[in-house]
Image (cartoon, rainbow, N blue to C red; front, side):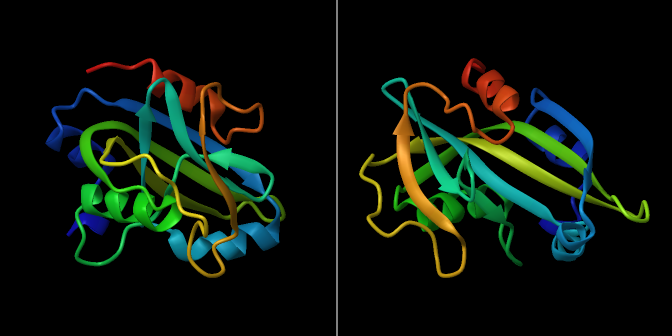
Length: 168
């Protein structure tokens, strides 16, 4: 099942030539509790570029690549395709797996931990028109836009910049 796939297995399935990133992030207890239900699951998303611009969504105080949680019965690529469509209105085909990120979240109050994995694919847009009503209910997406330069408040900005320069 895709949700039980390890990061190594997913990378190998796509030829192993993917960026691997990992880090430990200390978070406040409330945020840790909120995210804990994602332990052992996969998030999926895509880097979608067109004419030198990258498709991004604004959520909270940051811009990020479109993506979300893998649903039961989906492959990682199918999940990324669905998430981009739901969040931006843009239909894509997924090409290469670009990156697998493994993040350990640490509860700042008591040191408890949980792990979360995220797969980022290269998405090829069928059309570049974005939705006037981005995201789905309660998702918190306030805007969707094509950016030529990465905004300063891009989540995981260094990784996104690295992926933008990567050509397989």
